[in-house]
Length: 118
Image 1 (cartoon, rainbow, N blue to C red):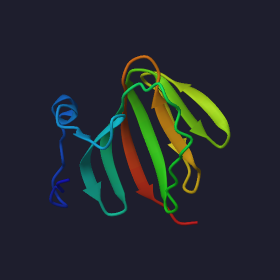
Image 2 (image 1 turned 90 degrees about the vertical axis):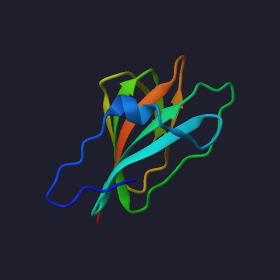
Image 3 (image 1 turned 60 degrees about the vertical axis):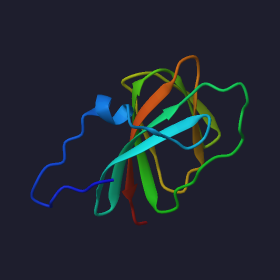
Image 4 (image 1 turned 45 degrees about the vertical axis):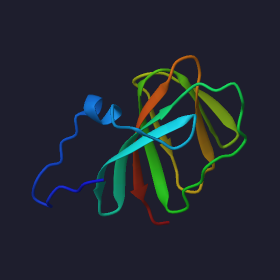
């Protein structure tokens, strides 16, 4: 993940960044795009899978904000399931267990992890 100089903007071409996603596992591909003091932004892609993984992720010190770029899927958090479609924004407060899954086509998100204090 590269950083721009403090006095210069960092510009990322989303289509080019999506072509560079690295495989985390058979379901998830990822690329970090921008990092700063207390935040980072990246792209993540979820492929449809036939199995359901009960595992969820928790960020103890970060809020998550996601923008659904394309595809469809679901967000599971706080015991609720929310159907996702392009154009939706999701905010997941720090400490909330959550996970995403593609339904049908690939689910592509732009995410921001923002360090928060409580």
